[in-house]
Amino acid sequence: MVNEAIIVELLGNKGNPVRYNCADATLIPKGSIMQITAGRTALISDGNTNAFAGIAAHEKVALDGSTTISCYTCGIFLMNDGDEEPARGSRVRINGVNVIKSASAPNLLKSCVGIELNNGTSGVTDHAVLIGSGL
Image (cartoon, rainbow, N blue to C red; front, side, top):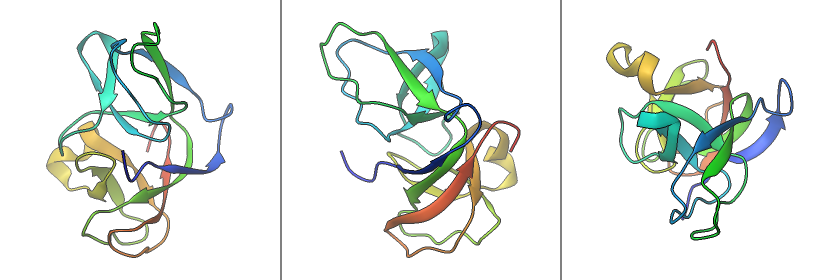
């Protein structure tokens, strides 16, 4: 996979990891932007209105017998903005597989990932984003 988030700094209690369910057959690279679905199950984000669960804290190997994954919920991560450059201080949301974009009011609460900390280059994983509960 490409565009995984890169840890800059874990905040709170070592990133405040939360454990979610996942399918044994699923491959999840470390740093994947995760969405939460029914049954407290986490999947790699795949759309622009997905509910944000966190950043995959470790790789989940397909068919390894594991049915859980931990996700960081508090920290600063470098992320890819696809083809947009969110303004510093703006809220950003999930926009497909491992990509973020500016959040607007209708999707802010559900898919908000965090706050853009700098203006990076469009299409490059260099956007520092602060994620954390209560943002």
